[in-house]
Length: 156
Image 1 (cartoon, helix red, strand yellow):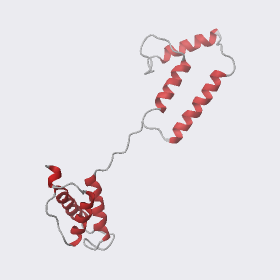
Image 2 (cartoon, helix red, strand yellow):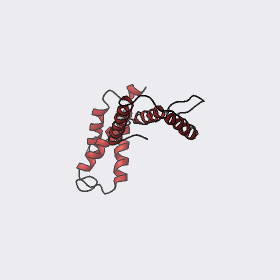
Image 3 (tube, one colour):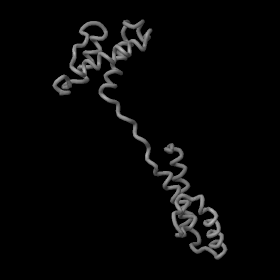
Image 4 (tube, one colour):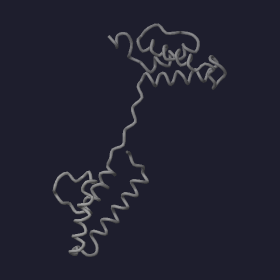
């Protein structure tokens, strides 16, 4: 689960307050506090994913470790758009700006238009004969700019 910026700020504030509490004030725990910590640690042992073996770690360390682990989970990077998909996107925008499949800004049969654009871009990419006139000719010319250097020789 990726954390939002607000969650990360909140965790950073908690860590700062926690570190202040640990570094300032008294440094020694009383016997009662130590016994209480040990009892709490034993009670939480089955629930804690960080506790692998019989080693005892103070409760503060475990809480701090879990907070840091939660805060440092990497975000998933957005996948890069392929050249083909970018060319299809440009082609669809060209079709949408024309009056070929309906009035400007509206495509009456989007499935048919998308199919035509995809097939045209695919033909250009493979170096095959693509339409020279009309709206699909415009799409083909735009796709050729995108796939410069790619043709029959490039795929062989």
